[in-house]
Length: 203
Image 1 (tube, rainbow, N blue to C red):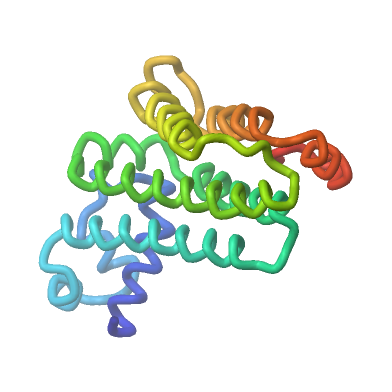
Image 2 (spheres, rainbow, N blue to C red):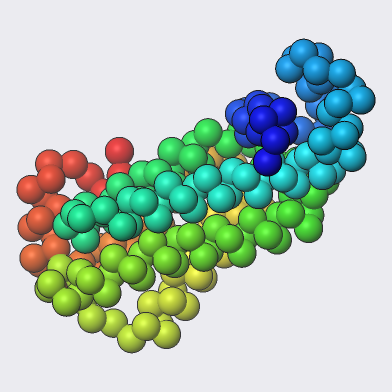
């Protein structure tokens, strides 16, 4: 990736989640970054390509941050909570307009977001869950049922249709889902450790 292209994507990865992208013009982006329209269109042939690369970049950044948290040499519950917090903080940074723009104007990318979101969450939970089971912090459950429960909750509750129909904000729903899953899978030993951390499941 060229330095110029990286500069553009760094800007759109900050701007689009806050303000959405549907009403943003390529001319506005070029002006804000101090580059010519010709240069911008050489880097991104059209706005759709720019939006697609921005969304994929945000997802990849999130996955990298979560993977780093999972790989850390820490207690499995602490690793899990830190990973959840990374996901939650990213979720809070997305405006309603950004989510609506993806859903209504980039539906093919919405499907990609859904697939990667589920994969990130499943990898986060299952990687730490199996280690936690070995150490007695999580209840051993049938993997098929656990996977099905998590996917069902994610699909039916943390999606734009459910949130808008019930006038809910993404982060509180995300927090509720995580608390529901953890309270159903932690052992007494796991809960005791959580209490020692002197904090809730999510801030």
